[in-house]
Amino acid sequence: MPSYFGNVYKDDKKLYSGLNAFIVSFCGFVSSLCGGLISDKLEKQGNYYAKAQVCIAAAALGLPCIALCCLFTNSFYFSISMLGLEYLVAECWFGPAITMVLNTISPENKGFAVGAFLFCTTMAGTLSTVLAQ
Image (cartoon, rainbow, N blue to C red):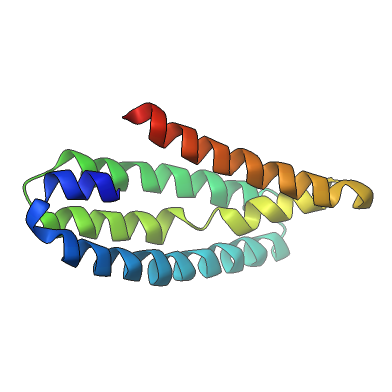
């Protein structure tokens, strides 16, 4: 996103860096907290697929937000708002996903499983950035 915003909105680089820091920290925190709370509450009500459903809903809600962020290049404020909304709705997947991994792996393999999960998600994010250019 820094390279996208830097290329499309050249005059707003400083504004982007400040707003992006707020979006990543505040919206990411709120989303992550809400994702865990929602999935735990639904699971206590008997929905044993709640964690997976939260992950699926996060992806489904985040996709149009990030598409709008990147496809409409007429307004910096619209794009940054869509980025903020994407973080707010889509970053809630991580906690439920880790919990699903931990709940399905034998105790002696939990460390390896979490490490492999984090490695794969990091590599996917890194490679997709390189391949998209």
